[in-house]
Image 1 (tube, one colour):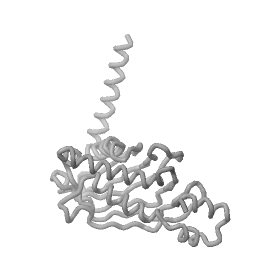
Image 2 (spheres, one colour):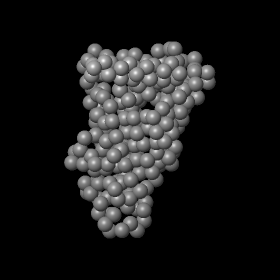
Image 3 (cartoon, rainbow, N blue to C red):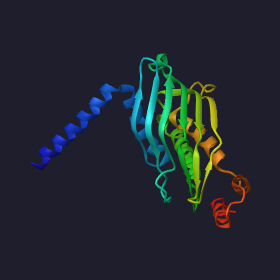
Image 4 (spheres, rainbow, N blue to C red):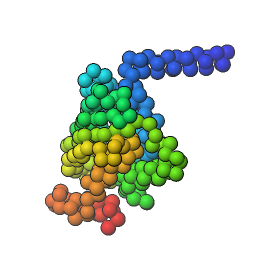
Length: 230
C-alpha cells in the first residue's frame, strides 16, 4: 500500500513539473538550471519562485530570487531580489551562444556578514573559483553546453546590511558585454565576473564605511571595524 502511495505521489510531482515546463518551457529550463547548477557552484541554497520568458520578444522576469549563505554564517540570505528583469535575443535561443540583452536587478537586499574565514561574499567568490578550477580538470564537462553573452547587467538601488549593524546603499553596478570577447561565457564564468564586481563594491575600507554614515555611533563603528578585521 505504501509503495502504491509513493508511486502516486511521484507521478503527481512529475506531472506538475511537466505541466509547468510545457506551459513555460524556456522559463522552466532557466529555473531548473538556477536551482540545480547554482547550489553546486556556490555551495549555498538558491531558489526562485518563478521564471517567465516570452519566446516571441524575449522579455522575461524572475520573481523572488533568493541566494542563501554558505555554511558557517547565521543570516538567512546573502542576496535576495523580488524581481529580476531579463531580455533575451529570441533568435539566439536555439544557438550555441545565447545573447542576453539585459539583466536588471532593482533594490535587492544584501546581507554582508563576517565569519572566521572572511565574509560570506568572500566565501561565495572562492566557491565559484574552486568550481571553475575543478571544471578545467574534469575535461571541461562543467563548462560544456550553452554559453551566453550578456550585453548589459545592472544592479541598482541595492541596500546592504553590514554585519547586522547598519544599512547602507550600495553603489550601482553596471557591467557590459560579459563573455563577448571570449565568444561566450558559461554560467560559472558569468557568476565569477558578477561576484568579483559585487564583492569589490561591498568590500569598502573601514574608513570609507564610517565616513559614509558620518557620525556613526561608537558601537556601530566598532562592529564595522570587526567586520573588516581591523
